[in-house]
Length: 238
Image (cartoon, rainbow, N blue to C red):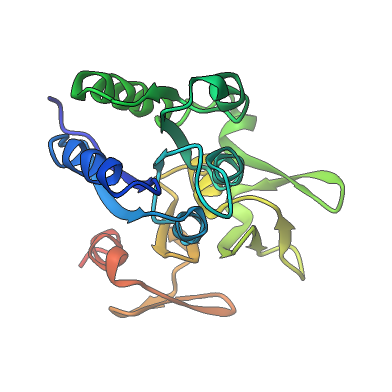
């Protein structure tokens, strides 16, 4: 298998044996990294909102919130979903919330790996249109309008639960849009921007000073999280 970036995943199912089976399958799949297992949908939602996952394996019937409701919220945070359920009748609803796959229990390892293959393809960011305009701008919805922001104008981006603030050189106030930080990161060129904290993306060229724990940018001192420190220091030439 080729070397690829691991897919962070979570499992949510109110049946402990079902959770254990998926955990064992994930452990046998090198491209997956399990970041959490939950028996309640609200616990899984907290993990999704904390940017702990790229992919979620969800049951349909769970206490307090259904897997379908959770999947709709996961979609808003850029997290893709594979349903693993005993209920055949919800397949249509599953695909309406943009599920990658709908697996019926009991799930074989072969069925599981087929779903993972589809997920890996779905999680590859779509190539940007090869035009100067597409290369230079990100377009977001803010104040009931579509706002085009030049990549070179961006200083940093802050994620706040269900929306982000995009700070620029030219605007006195940040542009606020209802997106996940992950979705914004996927829309920006990797060579020019990097995630340095669960709540922050920075423009690499805007860094004026730094140490192991902070990046100094115009008008802001951005924390560098433990998870991102090694990559940040490497990008800074250390």
